[in-house]
Length: 427
Image (cartoon, rainbow, N blue to C red; front, top):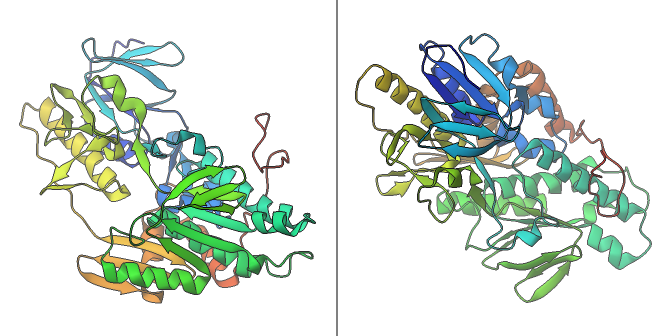
């Protein structure tokens, strides 16, 4: 695709935090921007687990990119998938056969699931990165209780009520804690043949503790809060196998029909199209201004970028992606003005993770809080950073109602019924 527009053309691949923040930061610049994404929406990924556990609906945490950018006249949103990058001709090829030239290119396509060499586990242990993932997991969780209700074999019933979350990071902790609340409170008195509160929820972490990025004291508090919710926390033992019937923990096979994966991420495969070295996780090492070595017109941001600062890697979290996106916009503006590009510096505002109803941990540069106060802080921070979505007050009220009443309004099972709870390809 060619354009007579004489303005420099900036192609941004990925409508996540990095790509969207870069796009918005270029709003007043004399450039034309093409934002390309395989999906038509921006996703507030930190709350994705709430959709997976029926606490929120999809529109609560996602909004169409065209709607968010409707007033930014120098942006064209393109729904498509990038399948090729010619760094010499400076062109991007799409799956539909179209090709576009660029003056500047930003790759901010995020990350995907990593199964540490066991990709065959993905069918039986889905991960959580997209709305499609969240809806599939929600279906799987809710159907597990339905299967148990209709099951006459005690052993089979126990397998349906045996849940495992692999990975003790924030996503795993949030999933396990919320799942325990659903089993012990939300589903109370709704079944006749089973007692959902007898469901077994296990959080498995191969390392020595959950929430390893937090201080050890908060990690221990998180473990205790999880156990109080009814989650069995297993650390120091890896999962060695997963199939449709269950998983192997160490040398012990555990029958389970619902295993969720939150143990690892890998960078988007889009980085391989650049033909430059990548690290073990598939991320692209970048220069101090986030440009690709040897290609000053190409930038990488978010989970796809490998950035070192003060001898430590910049974490793959939403605040880092936002800051990288804004920095790339500043670097492009500097290039256009003939000025040196600034060096990226990540500002770490702290870590926070929710564990369940009125339970969370927060680490603000040594200021550590946990429990109810931390949960209020976590709630306020996430509602504040919801941008471009439906009325924040409505989201907050729906969310608060779910927590105080234990009810989850999004408990709708979609798709055609199947033994494993998977959505039929026809749906």
